Length: 568
Image (cartoon, rainbow, N blue to C red):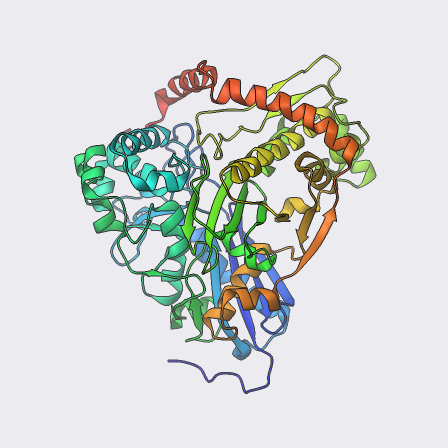
């Protein structure tokens, strides 16, 4: 069944849905010019499952991060109809819906798409649950994947900067096989949440080029060969063929039509276009008009993902991957990232701010971020005498090592909370500069630095980035970059714009050069960045693996009462 399309000449609308780490948000957007009419947010009741498996009381080992698929469906049931109601738009004028997801967030499912975590037989098994992007307990498997790929001369390994991340599909799946083989055997489809949610909307399994390329090691039309996978573990030989293999849809393609059930959830017309799934970072590029080669977009939230298009194929050490058409058709899409950014700042607010700071914030009407930002902004560059490494959640790029951890040096008895806060802000800027320099050294020019995501609202942070990078910082106008990006792809899937580039020109918005570098501050940051690199190289690439040893000691101490398989 397909509803009658809107009459010619009437305004049409699309819905974009962004599934983040802690919540999902929906936005209703006008197709003609990208005007965001209304938005709504649904907070995940289960948030990030890091300590205890729901309904079982079972403790999880260190470095685990799971999610509940019911939370994702509830975004469709609550945020979408709420945004539609707030918009005042006639549902009949909505022509398409598209979604994006954090990645690699991946789950084992039955052949009909039922998550194993929602079956009575497997619900008590932690490995049956969706693994969030920041599940880092598969680092050992990632290390073996990388070592074997280099030993065998696998061509694809260089498309991922020489290292597959513990966050990506293969390390997580291999962990399931080796720690709970029963769950692995029961898993009939191993699927990114980005594709699974589209399955819920259309009733049909589809896969997209973005998640398959960056997270699923799909290069030049192929997954890794069965001989390579068997060398990792004999039981892993048919992983790609039996659990991943499926025709891939390009970004902006129509994956199917909205089912009657999904129409009832969302309040949208049955039969409208549903776009192929996408990753939250990559989908945001058109929303910020950052689709041309050299325009690097940093999606800054709990973590940061850096995406940039290039005209040519290059091997850049330490990046997350390069995929032909991974961001937009006709270009090579490059990805890098930092595993924690906003999460680092939030951690410090939870741990390092005394009660009288909270009292002051209550008195002035500020939140703690605003209070610490104001206090930190008055200090000259280098005035705190601190350097921090931004590895509180491991290093995604360019070291690709989630056994690394955070470091702060230079603390004295006079160090104040706002000084550590500023050092942490600066550390994330240094991490980004490391990534930008890696791109340029690897032959991928960066001509513009554009920011989207919630952290673009922090003026001090944006100025620090401009000064540390020695380049202007442009800002996406939308407060809902990924959701708007999804809406842009929905418009293409519905046939309202001919392709993503054209839709970006019509519907995207950017404020060019919102922050400009100050030469004196940039000079001071050059000296501090040199100190950061010394610390970075000592702990990250040097022969003394102290951070690894400390992580191993911690994990040994904490795993006595937490086991990853079904046996208590």
